[in-house]
Amino acid sequence: MILQKLRSANLIHPPRWLVDQTQYLTVMGSVSYGVSGDTSDVDVYGFCVPPKDLVFPHLAGEIPGFGTQIQKFDQWQQHHVQPPDGRETTYDFQVFGIVRYFQLCMECNPNMIDSLFTPRRCVMHSTQIGELVRENRKMFLHKGAWHKFRGYAYSQMHKIKGKVNSSNPDRAETIKKHGYDVKFAYHVVRLLDEIEQIMVEQDLDLERNREQLKAIRRGEWTLEQIERHFEAKERALENTYATSSLRHSPDEPAIKALLMQCLEMHFGSIQDAVRREPSVDRLVRDIQDVLARHAAA
Image (cartoon, rainbow, N blue to C red; front, side, top):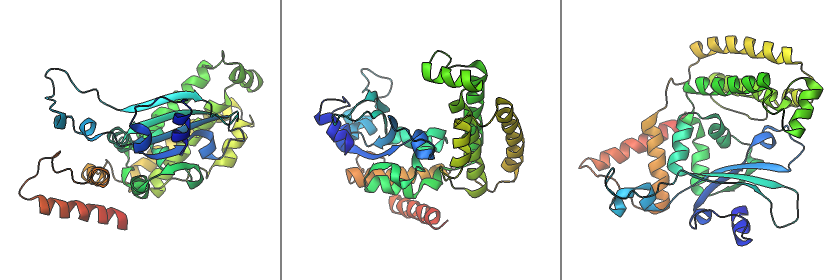
């Protein structure tokens, strides 16, 4: 696994437990969208399972709000990591704790949703837990994604109009040549295409629109075309949102059940970490029924 190689070479410095407890790593960005011929900079996202007392701090005696609090773990990140094999590729890593990862996916954060739907060729590392989460990735999709994805698209349009990267030599060159930053522009179109897939098909293929995105990255669209596309697509997607059969909000009990299943796979029994009621057997059966329904959907 790449993290083990980089740690052995003393090129990354994550928490000492993180490398061995990482469950899932995948390449993100333009590589996963099928629009990049340049892999010199590679974004890698994933999730890990922190030690048990970081997931359940009360096991270490913490009383929330009293005294010294245990340092929580949300994510580890390290940028511009160059491997020791002499290649020009550099990696930007973001590895989330499983609880934070599930929460962001449940909120339909576009980057997190993308990380679950990357093409198989982009997956660098995946354990049994990683595979279980990928297999159940559609469980995280709901209509709240429309607001998140549209918000990200608005942000990209704002950056285009503000010429945010005009001080970056490479990006400034594209602004000078085409009148706008083509990378921001293709993200606008990509985000709207992705949310359309989510609301209509309740699924996501990150590479489906790659030829159109490649054309935008080559500067074949004018800024006026980008703006018209954004406005027209936004209007159309408002109607799509109203008619979509996608669930309105996340199925939190089912997602929590999946999270608990992952934690039990990793830690074994977590009876000492969660309150057990007399009706626990019935609760376990209910959780299994929920997961079975989602698997059959």
